Image 1 (cartoon, helix red, strand yellow):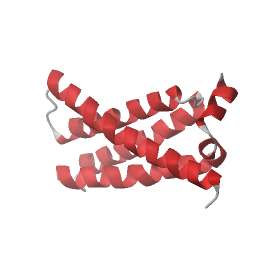
Image 2 (spheres, helix red, strand yellow):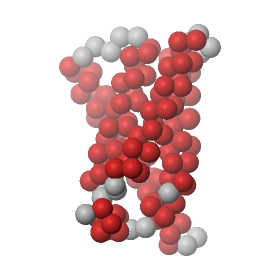
Image 3 (tube, helix red, strand yellow):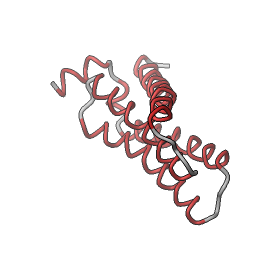
Image 4 (cartoon, one colour):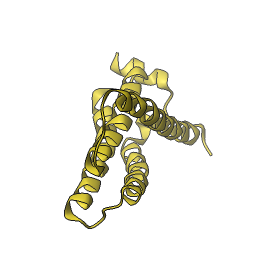
Length: 132
């Protein structure tokens, strides 16, 4: 495995960690200030609580807006698709929809990263030099 491959893998792991930490932290905060009632609202809250921290973290790490928006889309599109499954009645169970949501988000993130392999295979310091 090359050093670029290792950096790419570490970028992916970092994104997944930020996604799940964001989900836990923002989910807890939202739970304190609002009552999320219904499967659709829960899916929207889940998608937002993972997307917002990930995009914020990417900006903090020096990524330009376009890759951040692409990564955000890799989170939002599965959320919308899961809402469509719910709305159409194809899938109704909370647990099944959550599994689908996460099972699609993880490879969607990987696809977004593979489309910009150079972006995610370099050192984070490179992002700051390019976008500063």
